[in-house]
Structure formats: structure tokens, C-alpha cells
Length: 241
Image (cartoon, rainbow, N blue to C red; front, side):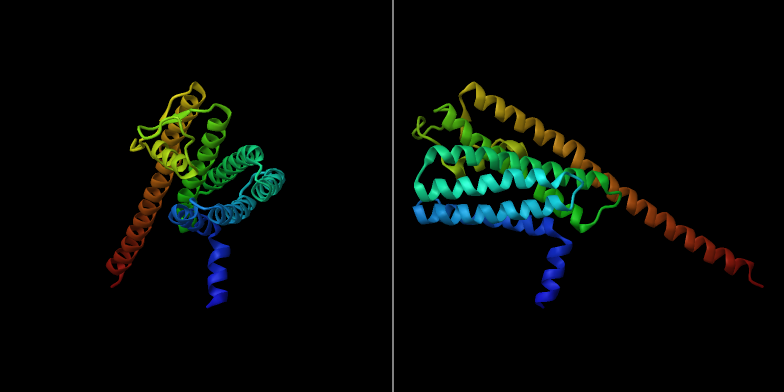
């Protein structure tokens, strides 16, 4: 059973990354309120970083770039957590944002290079979406520390928004549903939100539509092949005495 599970994970690391991201979304509300919870979130986040690097290793992108971003990001995150250096956390968030963008680009390159739609491509599509959402959430977190008051809500509008709020905003903008109650107020924040809107639209237009088109072409090819075999069988039966 263990060997089969390991084999599935090795064949579909994109699915493992997607599952880790979804699990983080579910567990983050339970971890965010306490110091130990934030420590647990950071440890789990570092695990997701390792998974992101694992996925990038399978794609045609230069792998050492990922390690150059991941190693200092993890190190600075641990130092900031243990020493309570909040200023260092901004640097870690900036590096993690760059790493998630890098991993997303690697997965997009992997999907565009393939000529057939498999389960792994579908899982990679979902994982890429979450990677982009995380990347922009980290970028928003850095933005609000560089420019205080970048994001506002009806309740306590001047307060710094939490990580979960930034992630919620990122998912709302990237998916295009527009359900977030958090509004960008500073020019830099508005620029980041506009960029994420553009990324979300282009992701649907290029990646998702291509996967749907490839799936339709494969189905059409299978139907044509089946029809050809049927015609040959019918022809041989007709020619038989």
C-alpha cells in the first residue's frame, strides 16, 4: 500500500502540491491566531515550498534558480520567527512570492510543452492556480508593510490585514469572482491587483482553454480511429464470399 501511494505521488507531484495548498487553506484559520499556530503555518509553508521545488524539477526551467530563492526564504523565515524580527519577514515574503511565481511559470511551461492531456496536466492546472494565488498574497503582504494602509475594509480600515485576508483577496481577484470585502487603496496595491486580474484572465484564456482544446482533439481522434476500424471490419465482411 505504501509503495503504491509513493508511486502515485512520484507520478503526480502536482497533485500532491495541490493537496498541500488546499490543506493549508483549510488549516490556516486554526493556526493564525496564536504564535505556535503561526510557527506551524510557517513550517507547513516551508514544506509547500519544497513541494513547489519538486514540481519545478520536472519542468523545463533552470532548477538552481528555485534553490537560490527557497534556501534564503526558508532561512530568513525561521530567523524572523525565532527572533521575532518582523522586518525580516517582509524579505522572506518577497522571496517566497518570487519562488511561487517561478514555480507557476515552471508548471505552465510543463503544460504548454505537452501534447496530450492527462490527469497530471489537470492537477498541474489546479496547482498552478494556487501557486499564483499564493504568490500574489505574499506580494500583497509585502506591499502593506512597505505602504501602510494599502488595503482597507469596512471593519477597522486602517489595520494591517492578516495573511488569510490577503490570501482571500488573492483568490477572489485571480478567479474573477470579485467577492472580497478588502479594497486596495494605495496606488501600489491597486497596481498589484490589476496585475493579478490580468494574470487570472490570461490563465483562463491560454492555459485552461488549451487544455480543453487538447482534450477535444484527443476525443475527436479517438472517435475517428474507432470509426476507421469499424469501416475496415464492415468492408472485410462485405468482401467475404
